[in-house]
Amino acid sequence: TVPCTGVGGDFYDVIPVPNGFVAIVADVCGKGVPAALLASMVQGKFHGQVGMQTAGGDSLADAVQAVNAFVYSRTPPEKYVTLTVLRYTHLKSGAQIELVNGGHVAPMIVRADGRVEIIRDGDLPVGLLDFARFHMIHLTLAVGDRIVLLSDGITEAENEDGTQFGFAELQR
Image (tube, rainbow, N blue to C red):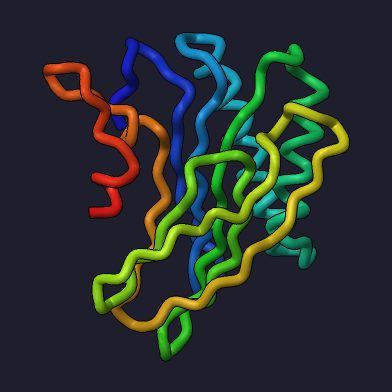
């Protein structure tokens, strides 16, 4: 990743788990060192939650719920995080996906035949409200399908004329 300033609050991580992995793409509100520090805290908290989830059977939604409480209790009201997390479980016929979207850019599935499906379902940003609740979205990928997680740094990237790349171009 390349931050738009010297230091930024976008991050991604992939955590190996039995028979697959857990992935996160997140964007902390704001820029610079404060956003980077909060991103580091969220990444660490999420790692801990995934470890507890794997050991204790908590859901991915529970992990995001715990991160929400953590961020809400430690940041001013104008600080929050958008994120998409998924658990990828390998199957012989493809993959099972459990996904939670906390106010983040909609993920896409690119099917093997080229069709693009936008996953618009989701919840509030993380850390914004203490009473926010998060739910899991269950998806199935066939062999050859791909799921795309991204940050708005892709869709909001500008060319020399100041025109943003945009979501339509991303789909194309």
